[in-house]
Amino acid sequence: MGAGLHVKLARRFDLFDANDDGVVRRRDFTGTAERLVRRFRVPPAPAERVRTAYEMVWLFVVASGGADRQVERAAFAAGGAELARRLGAADVVAFRECASGGAGHVVEFVVALGAHPGDAPLIRAALEPHGPWLPPEAVGRLVTAFFADDAPSGLYGR
Image (cartoon, rainbow, N blue to C red; front, side, top):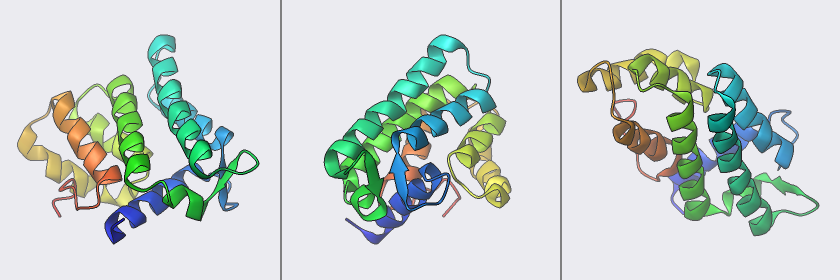
């Protein structure tokens, strides 16, 4: 696993580890899904798809390295490219159900998933060439690349 992917997985671990105790549990994954659902006021059926997407990632994580229904940072990172792929897929489901496709929603969504709020202007600038409404496929590629690929995604113009 490359250094870039390791850093991104560590960032995702920190996002899930809401109480900063060094382990993630099922409730940390469900909490992330609930925060997204509430923040974007998602109706019940789409909200269930978001919850299910992150639940499936949790099941992979705990099956890959969980002990006592919790996963430490090292075991989480050991999920490597497969974990990154599954996280990216869950993020795309969440994006599809949470964000309307407008650039403003995309920025808010990326920040909600763990990008630094101070980077919002950079994210917005990187999205400007695409116009005010972005095709879901393009956003899916950007979100997946930023949070899952080993290489820089271009989301920040980097």
